[in-house]
Image 1: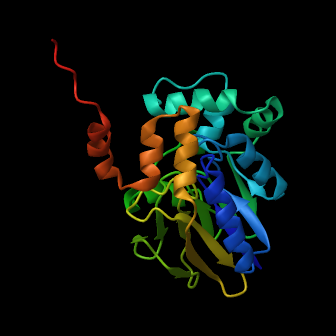
Image 2: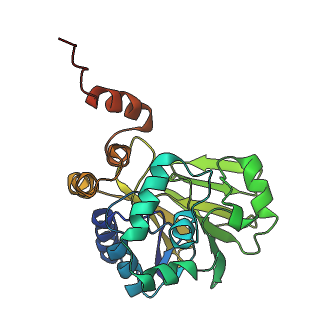
Length: 258
């Protein structure tokens, strides 16, 4: 069986449809979604409908929780808050209720899935190194667990506490456990801006990284037409370390007083 495992769609319809098309071409039979279906981009309702239509296992991401909760936490930054407030206004009540009722984690066959970490999943911990992964592994019961949240493909294993970034293929061999980040469909945070996901092949016992081209310009134009923060569009186009300068370059020169 081949599973297409996706995460952090963030309302990017162009990326999501391209990933589903690619997965089907690769022989994927079932999908799994690790949350953050909404937030940042301009098609939250359409993306929720697509994920629901896949009839797949889904867990809740922090943006899903904030968009469907009673209030947005004070610690959420201004751009994300503005995006979430817009998202709330552009979801139907039934969609909000569906997001609200998603589980924080779940077991799917012989694997576990979670948005951030099995250690206090409701606190959305960022796991970006082996030390942070140790806490997670204390709670992982299966050989492999998949997660999202950090928008970067990376995996950890209990074999000598190994951390592996930008993998192409993982062989799920040996007695050790694996904690695999599938990357982001709708907002990758690396120099490679293609949509990311992974394919789990349960027959070959391996995980393959997939990166898919999509219509970035259309996604960005929708963000701007919706009045969402410009930063959201730039993050689809250029590396994070170049965004600040790009924002400054777009500012108009002040007019001199006459």
